[in-house]
Amino acid sequence: MGFVDPLAAIIVSICFLGVMLYKRVNLGIALNATALLLALLSLNWQEIPPVIFETTIDLLTISVVLATFVIMLLSQLYKETGLINDLSESLIRIIKNSKIASSILPAVVGLLPVAGGALMSAPLVDLEAEKLGLKPEKKAYVNLWFRHVIFPVYPINQVLILTATLTGVAMPLIIMRQIPVIIVMIIVGYVTSLWKVSIVENKENSNPSKALDSALKSLLVSFSPILATIFMVVGLALAGIGLAEQGLDVLMASFTGLIILIAISRPSLQTFAKPLKGWGIYGITLATYGAFFLRNTMIDTGISEIFGTLVTNGNVNIILVLMVLPSVMGVITGSPSGGVAVSVPILAAILTTFSPKTASLIYMSAFLGYLITPIHLCFAFTADYFRCSLNKVYKYLIPSFLITFTTSLVIYFLI
Image (tube, rainbow, N blue to C red; front, side, top):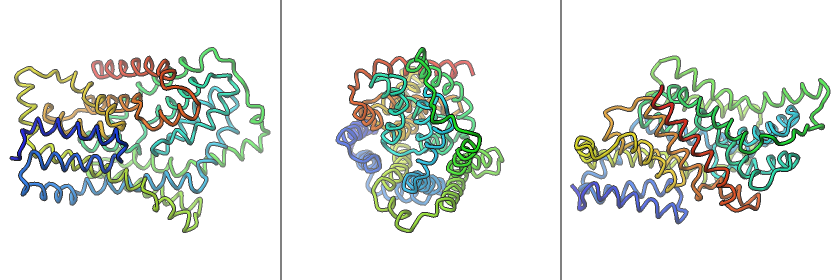
């Protein structure tokens, strides 16, 4: 073994991860550096290269890492080609209610899983929410809350993919458990920010039939890459042909969505290459690899023996750990991926296998912890855009968080 007791090494490594992310170090670099530090502290140096090698050549790791890269490229090209603008504009032309528009628009833009993406939907929300006379802090809440409401059931959400992969639970089974949570989130968001607000019709959307047909056609075309990706992910998972176990279902679906987007938008070589010149895509892809590297390193440290003993001695309440560990890591890392990546290997030592209910609770805990943390980029960008303090937004966000978390727990115990 290495120089430090495995439990102490894990604690030091998690603290190291928290400091790096507090210093705004990219999540991909932070996760890989944390895994390497953990290996140096807890393993003999001869054991470290095999862990890296086995992580790198593993088919599941390769599939999920490549899928993450393709999904991020798809998201960036949506922005660069202007398809996201077509999608948003067509929705505005179809929807005649500013309440519905202000809540749907951030959710639609949320289909693009890019860091700090709430800044893309903020101007659209501002335009519709202004018609309703909402205060800046309520505008910020609407933009933040409804942007993220789709994530727990969105099949090409990287965190959901990572959770399903690391726990070995089929994604549709996790999504099915989280549908009631999403319904509650929508109701809570509406009651908190839009209930009893006077309805304002978008008169400019009161179009004749021909204009409405044009808007519907534009919506269908601009939405088709995402729709095709979603339907293919779900279809391949339900087909039961074994692709999901190796992460190939999401990889194939994301490639299909990318091909459709290219066929529709016909981007120039310069437009296609622009996202590839930035660090964003590579940073998130590296974070996915880092999640697998960290998991494998934790397993090799003998973490199962440490936490298995704690459970046997009755020193650890499993439900409490399932709730607290992912949510705290989501708050500390400012990333649901970080929360899941750190939590699953530790929880694997306590649980013999992961069930859909445990996988769902891990995901929701990490997701909700990330949603309310002040280092969450979407939160920071949204508050800055609407010129309001985080404290004013927390007045609406914390009660919504508590109700949603309680719903997740109720579903865990009842279903």
